[in-house]
Length: 174
Image (cartoon, rainbow, N blue to C red):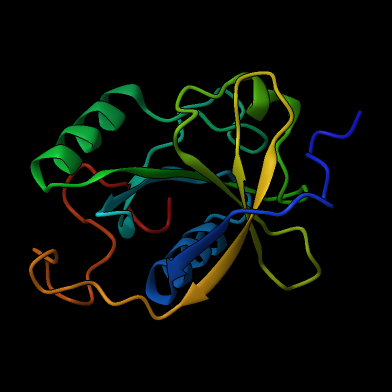
């Protein structure tokens, strides 16, 4: 059974800031043997901040599991910054950028976009987005990497700092 919805149906269109897209791809590349994972916060529907979260899965080369304590802390940080959960991302180092049966069974935030980055594409990174409901077929969305203006009134961090970094973030090479 195909895990994706009917491609003939019109897809939702999601704009991702170019800097954020580059950061997600870089995070996946720096951990090419293990799945990376994390959260994306948004303000007023515009994705603004990447929150890398430690992968605590027993087999991190083929599965991801967000560190529960860090996830709670990051979601609290989002609320304090006036952000909402926009997306959950993870990488597939050895498989295509589409939801696995495990991904579909472990959906806990159906309102969030799920981004999957594949390193298994002959030297070209691939990132795809999906709307997912637990144990239901995934609906792919169209992703556009674009320059997305973040109004100054919304941007509480320095302009070039889309990845939140503090002592709880995993180091870039983990």
